[in-house]
Length: 387
Image (cartoon, rainbow, N blue to C red; front, side, top):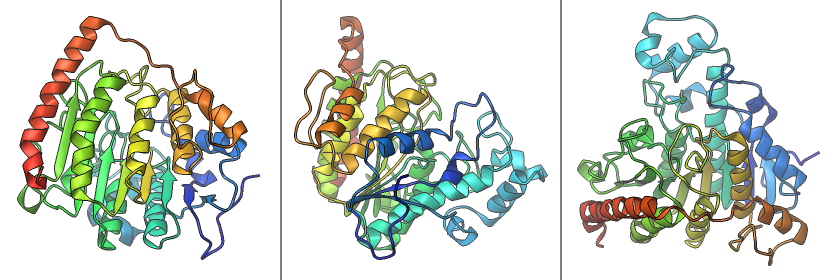
């Protein structure tokens, strides 16, 4: 068996936040969002020995209580969500996005969402207390929920709650979202603030839900210039994606100089995802994680999208291996691993993708669109950061 939560006061380097209850609240059958992904990640990393040792542990969350949820969500919405989850359907539910095609009403939706929120809040608390340098909640990343509206498979917004908790603790928060869908709920929550800077790389809203996240969405008031969006065209591959990340996100992160990162590690940008149209391999998000780690700041990572389940699980296993320090160097599937524990490195190396070569017409189209986006973003926001 894998170790349970550490005793109070124990020192952690990396915390994998999960408990069996998170696997016990499935969305309706045939629904794209699969809550069992996190449990499959946990099973895999446990079998690899990545949940044992003094510097990496599994930590069990507790559900976010009502008062914690009300830090972002309205009292009326929390009540309607709870009642709907228990089978009492109130007339205002539909206007709040409940009972729609992407947010169906089902038994346990409130309990699951509150527990996922509690897991992200636990990660924030571990970082604030200095008990963890990295924390990963694969059940989190519910970035589409609004204060009084469910949206995009998301009922409660764990990301906003965690960012608020970290900012409330006096930390400058850099929220980096690599989910293929724009994190509209998180952006809206901090649109007029600069203590939480949001950077999102996602498929363009012209071709994908929620239809937001364009280059001119840059914040308002005190937050002007602190909402950053990098919409990407259909067919974006690793090279184009990483070019945008390096030329937009990295300079802004350096200028903002955050105290902590919150990373949405949605893996629906991977090639073969049934709901999106990007063509990334696992190597692109891993290089993003590695680049963020070089800033030597604490990282709270959450899950998010990812509807090709095997690909998503494999990517989150790799992400955890990097967050807990087991994969400090980039490893292609064709390269021999080195510098880490041999048995673990061998298995992590096997999980990495080979980089495909895109067709030249596709590459030219994608490169031209990405170059134009980079120039728009730099023009719109860099001046607010002295760049």
